[in-house]
Image 1 (cartoon, helix red, strand yellow):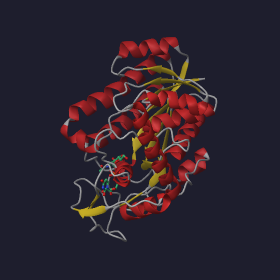
Image 2 (cartoon, rainbow, N blue to C red):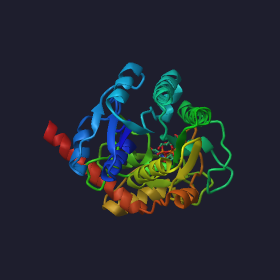
Image 3 (cartoon, rainbow, N blue to C red):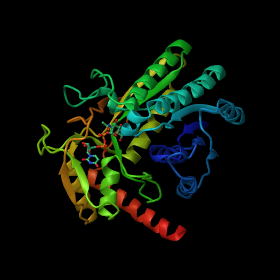
Length: 342
Ligand code: UD1
């Protein structure tokens, strides 16, 4: 069975493609390579021994997308292709709306015309903003997103709810908490292009000496050690949740279905705890300095992921330190690769 994976060479996308291939699905990747590199495709093949179909183009090109649907017997889609930098989204909001929403609508139009169902959307815990109570479950009230990035996630969810309702299709909205880590093979991970915005890639580069010091954005939050608390989920666990969510859609009968799942570990860790766990896991130092708070950061967010466990039989149980060990292996791989390609 062929599954379209957009953004399939990106960070979470590439790990999910591996899990799909390992579970017997055939995969068709569309990725415009705007935030990744072509070698990821070869590494997917090395890991799985299978070669997905690959089309390098921008999903705003409906004409090219139509050709992909004509060439393959697509039975579902996992849609990762999107811009994701929160800060950047505030500076170039129109590009975010255009890229993240036009591409989504183009795929859905193809789905609608061809009578297809089974659509999985990458959403984010950002839809909850700073929730009033922890842990956050799927019924926790949403707050209007502060960033354009967050708004594209909220709007994406609404577009999919309408799509499911009006055309009687099945969709799954997956709200990720903070994905971290790399593939245990050491051959897939988050490709840091430019200065990383997210914590773990920045920690990785600081440990490697690429950055002088980690800036910890504030230690005066109302948390046990003063630094903000997040739910860091191992990317391979996250990838497996996509396969489980897809299988559930495929196994259920025809008609409207909207599944919503929080994907997290259920455990919160502070910024300082992440730094310490990274040092302990890898036997390296991560120099840091405490800075002013970063605008838009919330104090605390961690998931109640019981619904996913109950309905998908899925649970993330990879310990933080183990996930952080894979990050360091990935950094070593990137260094080796850089030497070889110079
Ligand atoms: C951010 C986005 C979120 C998105 C997620 C993707 C915001 C407000 N939210 O989440 O919508 O889904 O990325 O992974 O940007 N930190 C430092 N120093 C750094 C980097 C981060 O101290 O150099 C701290 C932050 O203050 C935060 C924590 O580390 O407390 C995690 O930050 P980050 O990895 O950027 O994720 P979020 O901000 O939680």
